[in-house]
Length: 376
Image (tube, rainbow, N blue to C red; front, side, top):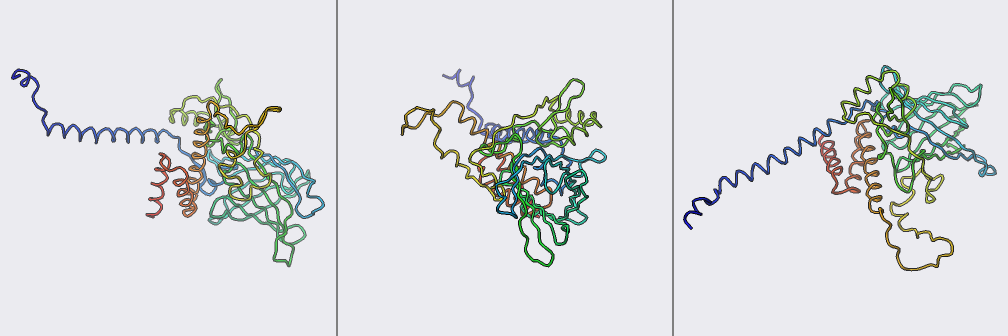
């Protein structure tokens, strides 16, 4: 009909093209701006670059020690508790402190960057009321997982203290070896395998589920109260620092957009029965799908059956949460290595992340860091 044609003129091809161009250009731009604003809201972290790879130590660890120099005593172990915390000077973290309960070599220590790049120094005190001062010095390997420190041994020779993290950074093994004067070989003296409180090896690191510390931005394990509000912190050092200058950290928290976060300590999880008590000195001691391959436990008296059980409600969501936790933990490790100036180790960690978590937004972020590091 002529009237309808006049009222509804044919679409203008040029106008349609312009509208499509605007939609294709403006919408992604808005999304990019929103993403950038979201990143800007994250609180800035002020960790010393040399100590950033060792941030995983912060918190409380419990484990078992065994002597290695006397086979007849290998079943006579003991329990140790290690508590690591940040030490602050003028409002900035400058060192890591450790308090060791029932330790055989150290009762306390302070870990700082050494005078030279890549060097570290651990000063502390031997166990006992009359414990003598000790001072170790050494290096962190390229992976950021193995810290080796040495000192002159009492009576001659060299004593070496090593700390090695496992693949998930939820366990570490501390070993002490000794090389007698005139010898070229270190002999093992003792070994302590420890697990972080509140972590389960089978589920992967749960630190990504915790509130972030208002002081350092690390995973919180406790809280500090101020004016009737509770704020998450990662260690006793951050508790003291917050109390010294609460206004500074409340302002920082407000700038991040989190508001008054009420953090509470996480409930400790039991160590998985699939974890070897002293396997933390390897990379990953259990394959990621090891637990999935284990048969499910049956109630006593229930007949065995070959029929697969129906998946429990929420299993899919739990798996997604576990994967997100592992991704957050792995990406933070790579970022810490990059911040510490360990380029090759950071590249390796980012590449492994892209492989393990392909197709995720975090993988794209890791890929961009790979490109940036390779261009340097």
